[in-house]
Structures are given as structure tokens and as C-alpha cells.
Image (cartoon, rainbow, N blue to C red):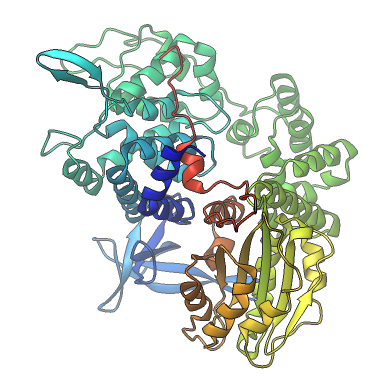
Length: 626
């Protein structure tokens, strides 16, 4: 590695910790359902969001939340909501009602962390934004893009003795590129609109002022946001099929909001015609385009029969989202309509996976052509959404197909992350884990399948460790391996690891030890002594709440004694709305694990640290047309 690059990596310790934290942060910045905010000192952002609904009862807005009881979900009354959106139970304030939209606390947390990295190293922050673009973590991408568009490294001239010596770096170009580049993981119109919403948040505007990004003491800093949205809209107006495609994809009103937000001035009436955007004269009479012009009515399938709708689907091949929007209620989602959509190629792979319960209900999984297309979609699954959907299907074939898809998605996501790494997984089955062991096993089936079997070693323990042989990288194999293991006995974490010491790591391999349990054991010295034989580079901890509700810290303290990091695998990862969460978070946490120090005479590991990967990632460049 280049010596200068190595020095920068060593200096970026604080930045690495922040990046590692943010790439693994599970809270969303947007909730599209109404919810309730309550104080939570254990949460990273200080509050917790959970979905709620309200109903009018005796003149009061009564708020309910959903609680899972066994296989059923029941509504539990929380309190009544007042005009200030406070939810009260009598005089006691329970929380605050939130309409769908930005989760401000999460946005502010993200933005502050990005600002801290920028203060440590401007160039690293720009490379981080560029690196993030090709990844699926949309929340982080949007925050980084917003920040890059307003930060103060914008290509200004450096002048000496009245002459321009050179121009400073223009990192705002990175923010522009994130908005303008077209790719599979690009920023869609809703995300570009969201960037503007983020910059309008008062707390975000205050951070930008504090950093010296704007001159106004009153108005939020927008940097190049208006400029880049104007470019984005102009390009689509000049390439009308792209604008028409956005309308067909359901982004019509979002594009209109973007145009209104920046006061966009089209070059022709065609822009309004495609968007079906009726123009009326303003009070001061300054508008000149498309005033009073009759516009083509929106397409409708109202009045069409099921047969006619199937004919339109077969001929026009609209995407599934558009079909849902056009389907009249008197026809609905019939077997024929869904079959026509599948066979015409109107559904994406993700659509087909999400619609598995519907395909099953309509008997379409028994139709050879539909079954073939569904299985092809499962082969390409990119996340673990299929696991949650499997809970809503009845047949064994559908359940197994969805589980297989989730296994493959995990395997694909983890392959690169665990390169040149040997993983030891140690699971607590002591008496305190009664009721939690089943949960722990369920979590394991969600991610262990992603590890190569020849470099994964698993054990369970109480006061004695027992190796568990997982015969295949499948959830079913994990479940089978744990058959016959029940919670009981005392707790000795060191014994769980000791039984795996016979599997020695190769000289070039980094060792990661994952623990699953409640940490209720005081023998951290003993655990660190056993672990030292493997020379681990990090511990991972999935802390499962046990029946003792204690505050053990054996793994954490052992890691401190060894001088290695211990990253948490949050239990909430496995219930998150984000179907990418489990594989993304686990993969990123492992990728962020420090590379081990090579022993004398041993070739260093080929794995790169997260910081090195980011620093070596090229800065994004705007498209030529922009």
C-alpha cells in the first residue's frame, strides 16, 4: 500500500468510527406511516418511533398501537391526542404523534455525523459520498448528497498578488453527480425532492450556518440544490421519452413538486402537456406558456371489462405499479389480470416476490409459466424481504422457495465481506436464555447462511461447550443443527469458544468471533484468555434479551481487555421495515472490522479496511451533458 495512503488511514481513526456507525445505523429517515415518538435514552437518537393509528371516539382522537400476541396482532390503546399532537394518558404525556414524512431526529443525527467527518477530512467525506452512491443504503446517500451540495469546497479560485494560482477542489460536483448520474441505484425524483426537504429543516440549516456554508442568517442554505434540480428537469424535458417514463412510473406529481420548488421555466408547452399540468394565469400576468390550453386527459381503465384490461396489459406492458393505479375497483386484482401482468413481463423480480401470497391465493403458482417466472425472480433476490413474506403463505413449496431466495441473497451479499476471514459463532443456551434461545436461532438462520461453511465454526454452551455442525449454508440446515438443544444450566462463555479452538485459522486469515446471548457471565478474563489463542481482530455481539433482564458485559469487557473492537448486531435489525437491513448491516459491520496485523514472515491479509476502500474509491464525475 502507498505510504501516504497508509498515513491517511491511520489519521482517520475518528472518521472510521463515524462511518462504521453510520453505515450500520438502522433507523430510517422517513416513515411513510403515521407514528408516535417516545423518549428512549437507549436509542441512538434519544427517541423511539413506532407506528400508530388514531380513531375518533366520543369527540377525542384516541391513539392505538399494534402489539403482536402469538400469531395475532392486537390494537392497544395508548392515549388521546390533543391539538399539539401530544399523546396523553390522563395528564401524563406518553409521546408525540407524527404524520408520515421525515423522521427529523434521525435526519439530524445522520447529518451531524457527516458534518463531523467533513471537519476531520474534507476529501475523505467527498470520497465517502462517491462510495455510497453505488450502494443500496438510500437514507445515507440522500444525507451525503444534501451535505455535498451545500458544503463550502466549491472550486473557488485561490488568488495571490491579484493572480489566480489555481482553483480549489469542487466537492459540490460530487453532490451534483449523485443527482444526475443514471444507474440502477440512482436517486429517483422522490429522493431528490427529499434532499430539499432535509435542507429546509431548521436544525439542519443551523448546522450549515455553524459550518460557514451560507451567508444568510435567516434562510436555509441550498448551495447547488436549485441548480442541480434545474439541470435534472431540463435534461428530461429535452428527452421527452424520459419525462413520459417518469409519468408512467408514477412520479408525475413528484416532478411537478420539483418544478414548483425551484420555479422551473420550461422551454415549451410540451413539458406541461406530458405532465398533464393545467396552467392558469398568475395574478400579475407574467406567465406566457400553456395558459388555458386543453390537456390530454389521464388514462383510465374505468368502464373496461376484465378481458379488455388484459388485452391492454398484453399490448402496452405497463409496469405493475401503474396497473394497480389504473385497475377499477369493480374489476379488481383478478386471476386473469395478475396472470396477464406476469406473462407480459409487467412485474419486476421484487414485485413477484412481494406478491407471492397473492399468486398463491389465486392458484397461479400452479401455472407452469407463472411458476417459472416466479422461481427465476427468487433466484435473483437481493434482500431478505422473502423471509417476512414467507410468514404469509400457506404451502410448503412457497415457504421453501422464499426461504431459499433469502438464503441466496444473504450468501451473495456476504461473499466479498468475509473474504480471507474465519468466523467463530458462539451461542448461549444457559438457563437465562429460556424463551430467548428460539429467537436467537431464528436470527442465526437469517444470516449464518451467508458464511462459507469451510470457514464457519459454531458452538452452543452453558457450562460446557458443544460444537454444532451446520451441513449446508441454508436456513433449514441451521434449524436442523440446533435440534435437541434447549436452554438450561449455568453460563461460561469461555467454554463456548474453547470447544472451537481445534479449528485453527490460516496465517493469512483474520478471525472474527460472533457471540449470541445476554452476556450474563462475569468471566471476561477467562474468555479473553481463551480468545487470545485465535488472535481475533474483532468480536461481534448479538445481545438477545433474556428472562433475567440483567446487564451483563462479559463479551464487551473481554474485547476491551484484548484491545479489539466489539460491534453490536442489533436485535432490531431482524424486525426492521428495511428488507435490506440484515444483509447490509451485517456485511458493512464485517467490512468495517479492522484488518489484522500480520505476524512475522506471514503475508498480510488481502482484505481492505472500510476507510481504505473509501479512500481508494474515485470521486463521482457529473455526466457530460451537464
